[in-house]
Figure (tube, rainbow, N blue to C red):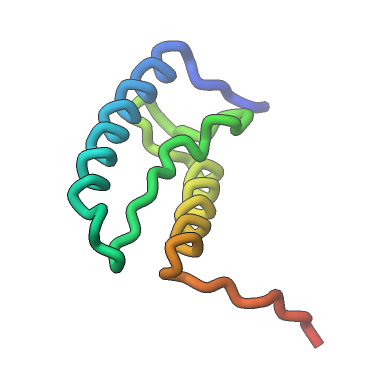
Length: 92
C-alpha cells in the first residue's frame, strides 16, 4: 500500500523548501566568485517523484526520498568537478 502526503503535509513542506531556496540563493551569491566552492540547489529533485518520499510533516525524508536526494547531490558534485564517477566495473 502506498501512502500519499496529505494536503496539510504538502503545504508545510512547500513552505519549508521555499525558505531553504531563499537561503540557498543568498549563500550562492556569497560564494559566486570562488571556484573551489560548489553550491547547487537540489531542493527540486523530488518534484516529479510519485509516491511518498517524506516520513512526517516536518519534511524529514524517508529512505526513498533520501536515496533520490543523495543521487542529486552526487550528480551536482560531478557537474562541479568535485567528484568523478568511475567507469562501471564488470565482475569477473
